[in-house]
Length: 310
Image (tube, rainbow, N blue to C red; front, side, top):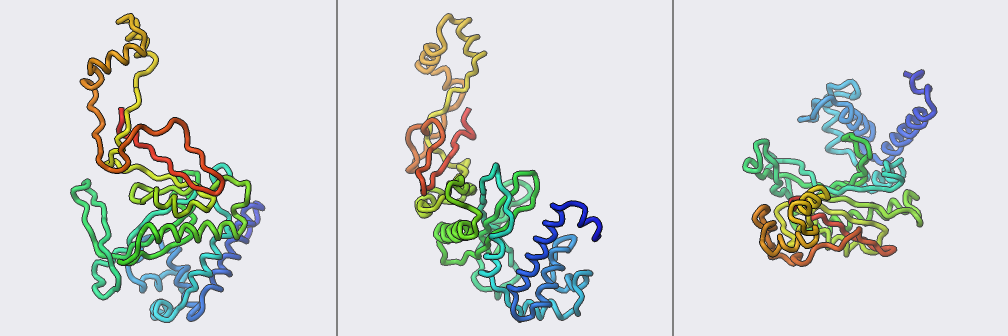
């Protein structure tokens, strides 16, 4: 093993970085530090999901007795803020030199823990389509991670916050993203002159509100548009050059005039059903052409309502 580590200088640096992080992680532990550290080692080296703490005591990485995991969980202490500060200086994956962050909520299901405080109903997607979705009591956690540009499930998790029953999800997310970005700036991961940090989120977030709350940070927000939400935008013309040339050869009418005549006759409406007009505040004309430009120190939102347009 020692020979394989010394083969490449990059591998040596990665091994040294891992060793430094393990030392820093041990420094974040106070009571029952040794037992807690071995418990974390066993959890990371397990071959599959861990259902009970006693399973970890059977792994080779855990060299203590059967009662040590419970002692570490009951009496061990982890400084979460110190651990957040240790994660930020680590090498982050970048997309063309740009930092990209993602935020999402993942639940820790606690259906049988009736005495666990502040449980919420968490949506669980079924395996047989949306009709099999159901809710299970649990604790929802908001995660902020830096994905890698290659095709892998590994991400650099930078922060995790549990959402409570009385919490405003948008306010908690904004505060969490603000702390992560400020720590990135303080650690030198982002410097003036670099491209703004891109934050990607799904359709469950209020992107407009988050854009306003984070407008003083060097970030850009990109949110997905829910497929059930109609933005009331006009559909873009989908005819290609070949179809336009064929139509002109058949009718003798230029493509622009042919499109106007087809719209007057309702020919397009006969072939394609019109987009359903929504009633929300986002109803209005189509989006402006081109990418929105963010002012220095501000954030912007990019929506793509064309996923179902023909």
